[in-house]
Length: 346
Ligand code: NAD
Ligand code: ZN
Ligand code: ZN
Image (cartoon, rainbow, N blue to C red; front, top):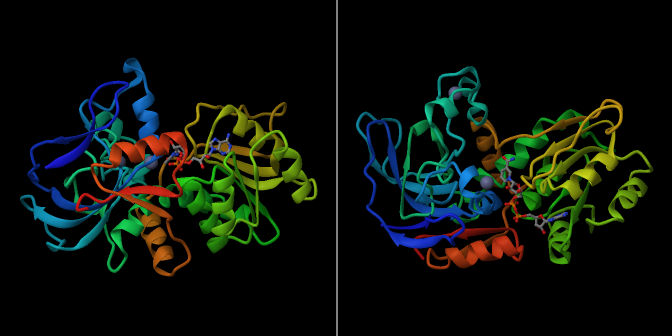
């Protein structure tokens, strides 16, 4: 089968021919219908050899959807031909976190060598994908896989962050979203759908600010030296009850620090290399800082339900597998609108 792999440190992703995998006991093989490209892939491919822990060659793609194509020994509960989304942050299935569906916070995955597809295990940027367990499949039903695949990360990750701050975001509150890219443009829609907050979006790119307004941001402003003053002024000096920093760079975390309200929360979602010290000489009284990772299985079901209701959608740029390296270049350069999705069948 064909697959998109990261093969050498510092190299570009390559389209290669590799053996089609067979599902082992308990595993499910999907024929991939869509796979999304995430900025975390760029981050992984930017790491120097001494920090790179994902194995080589690595078949990329941690946002996956597909049709059940073959069942390993002992697998029951799924029908051949069913259209599925893949829950990516695979855990052990046994610990307390996994038992409540929060496999993203599995306490044993690292020790057991369990890694998500595309971030250690072979990923979804291939014609076929092996999923380790049926519990990591969520039926898509009538949802279009190409339009929906990125809900498994670009939807699920902001949803998980927003749900944990729900109590802070009643009518009259303010939420700031820094970075209106793949995750950010869905974050804005989720905030509009499930909270009463006024949404202020920040980005460095004028087209992304336009997209932010189109998907429901009340205000979209440049992410520069003027941002702190602008947010202060839009909130009557109070600041934002929740800041979702989906860039996570030193400059954006400084904006977050200066604009989070008293007793507010900063959610660091982006992996931009920044850290935010918390304490009496940094953040306002009562403010908390959290760095959430991905989301839970039940939250993925909820995100898909939100899409089914029409409340949220992903702006998709569609690419063939041959075009995947080009799509990664655009992701790296910041010139994509919404999410790039690769369709192996194209
Ligand atoms: P993306 O490239 O689609 O979007 C990034 C956006 O940030 C772009 O619109 C870009 O213009 C904007 N931006 C860049 N610098 C900025 C700045 N200084 N101020 C404001 N906006 C700025 O990326 P994505 O796929 O949406 O991922 C966003 C981040 O989230 C990445 O760091 C990624 O690694 C991370 N991520 C984290 C998790 C998690 O579980 N915590 C999950 C997925 C992605
Ligand atoms: Zn991701
Ligand atoms: Zn576990």
